[in-house]
Image (spheres, rainbow over the protein chains, first blue to last red):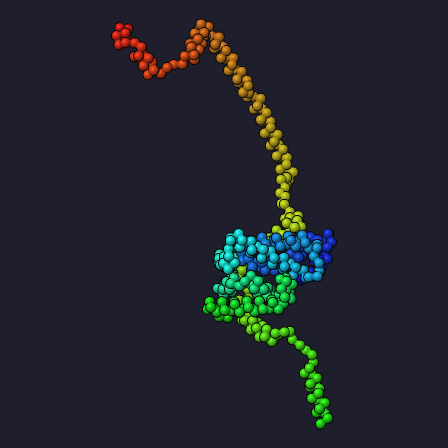
Length: 186
Length: 177
């Protein structure tokens, strides 16, 4: 199916008569991308489901005020990233978990996850990702799984391209070390 | 000789073209290449994350979001199902006939059975007739006895025995017997 252009979605959304249709097109185009982006950060499917809905409700409420000085999908990604980080911070506060033990909790969620079809090596990669600081994990996911450019990630996270590159290289090195320590060769 | 001189000047010119690189570029380039190789190797082993979703999840997700925003889905896709009760005229007339028969039967039985009010009035007349047949003195005697009993409620057998034993001597009792 041909993907509709963001400009067309925005144009249709600006007209009250075609607003609903525009939002439907936007959902078709982005809901899966946003789901996976959030899922890789919060791990649990049900939490992701709630967050995706909240993200698109925010998009619906604020799209009218969206200014085209940034790209539509980086704007949606930014909302999704902020919602996910807020959720993870709340989770830490609620469980009174020290920052260095958060990955342990997420690892438990990963092992107990109802919807994880991955094999041993995929599980190891996810466990390796959980050892990374939140920002490195976020950057690695966007680069590795979403194939975003540094410039796009920079727009989403508000971090300079140079800093992003350094973070990504460190993340890759850490993951490599983790995997080799677990006797996984690749 | 003159030609060689011109040539070396030209090379000097090329060397100084003015192209520059970002600061620390060559230090970072090394790290960048290493990371890229690692990522390529990792991707050949693990290309996806392994997460899954329930079957039909994304269709449901879209419906849920639209229902909470535009209402589009609830109106157009999730229209409430209307089940027609009167599919044919025959069923309609049969139902009407059943209703008439039920109502008629109810009315008929209601008219032929004495009501509870009537029943109670019949029992009152019967009681009155019975009292009329009993002798008046017998009734008065019965009422008086009942009222006395009510005024002096009966004492227990043990209390009566205690009273006799404490107020009468053994001789009095044996004399009376």
